[in-house]
Length: 152
Image 1 (cartoon, helix red, strand yellow):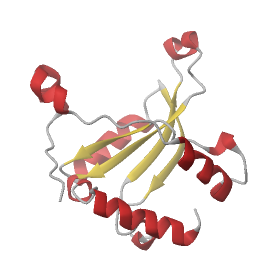
Image 2 (cartoon, helix red, strand yellow; image 1 turned 180 degrees about the horizontal axis):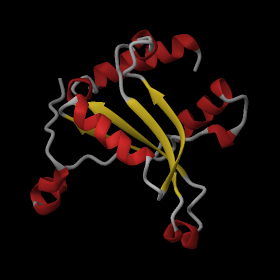
Image 3 (cartoon, helix red, strand yellow; image 1 turned 90 degrees about the vertical axis):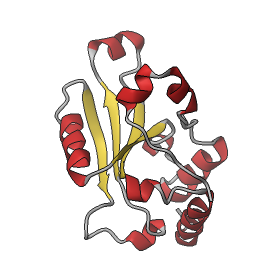
Image 4 (spheres, rainbow, N blue to C red; image 1 turned 180 degrees about the vertical axis):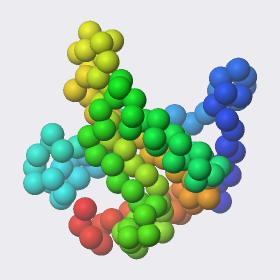
């Protein structure tokens, strides 16, 4: 399988070698964006909130919940949607066992407004390391099968 190495951003920020190894996600592929718009959102592209996305990995639930609190109370952002897939009420069958806290947000500060970017919505996934370790190509295939079986 694929090996992941997780490091603190504070360390990577100071180390050019570590920074060069950071895997930054690309934008959602066009085909998947169209598929999701048709299958899940009734042909309404305004409901696609995860074309731009990234994740933050945490060692502990306490660190994750502290970060979540900082994000939702930050006056520079507006949370548009929050999915708590760590909740005991959430059925992990829907995501082939994968769990996270998914936040769709917009940056709404003056700088974003000056750039005309305050309407852009992105997704931030807060994930525990144990679940991030499951994000392999095989784990993603299981997720896609589960998603496709539901038609979403």
